[in-house]
Image (cartoon, rainbow, N blue to C red):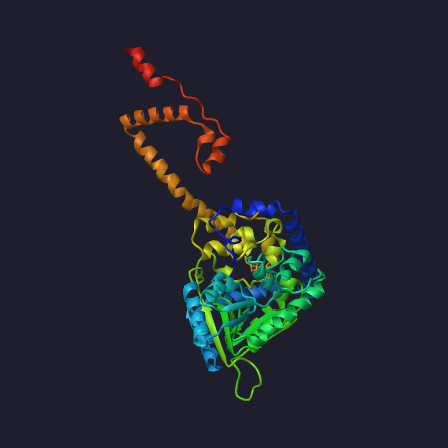
Length: 465
Ligand code: SF4
């Protein structure tokens, strides 16, 4: 991903200004998100009682989060029992180290990847390219933004911000002849190109939508079949699993699998649902010889047990993005990190400690549309409010120190007089256009009253002489 597109070092206002004024981007976003919302409504209508399903899913995820440590241990035991190797990563650095080590052990130069937001979170592609590997994203949207050197703009549809002409122009960079902008022809071109990469790959990397602890099964849902190829054609498969993406039973999986595609793209089920239980066994004809599962914490355990615990129930469906009035105007890049929209506005400050991250919860109108859309009922707007409160309390530390100094000065007569004189001089010299940095915007809209040339005290003293 390009840091040009993802950075928390600029202000939210700066990051979103360009997107908001890009009418093409806004119309691309509106077209795609409206289509998802319409299809989602039709897919949810297939449930006898959608609210009941949502309540059950919320309860199931809540139960898993309450016993997450035990369920993860059970998952690890089952994974090892079916022949997978489990690696625990507390941080993004540890996760990258595990994958780099596996890649180097196998001298894996050509790597194919199926879509994984967790790999974006830990900046895995860059880490692998640094050691000389050639990484190819094989989800069509991910491949497009990889070629464009951009970051995903949506967690389900990474290239949602591009229309077909822009997609054609991006794919043209690797095409020999001229491409048309007919979607079917562009997809056929991508299929031909990527097929070769699958066949030549030394190692495949995937994310994991759900891991089932009772059987040690990794479940991937995709619409393009690339996930199945990336996890079964290369001789080694590395699966990246966010520690919260586990369920205990197939019954819980059944519930969440019914919700994820409906909420994400309005499909009753995705085209491919792959359930991977271990590596290739003797006498089996295909599948990887080795399966590695990297279980990533990277700040998640510090959310557990806080008022934000429920954020770990997120199944990454993207429904909250599609309905968010802010996301629909700005797209994903303005949020500054890998997770955009309401879910990103909550997750970013919880996983990244920085001033830029603390500002992201402001990218919300608090209308509650995200909560209504969320298939597991995460109270996103309450969390956004709590994060804003937290950020403003931290920002107020400086304010409190200033009031403290003022109170201390004004409790001593000599300091009181000196501060009045100083304030009077400063007010005379005040010029809003000369105020440096961001406070200038505040200063330009204000007038400071000109203090009297002689203070009341001076006049009193003079009159009483
Ligand atoms: S917060 Fe809810 S709606 Fe948003 S991505 Fe997560 S599960 Fe989907």
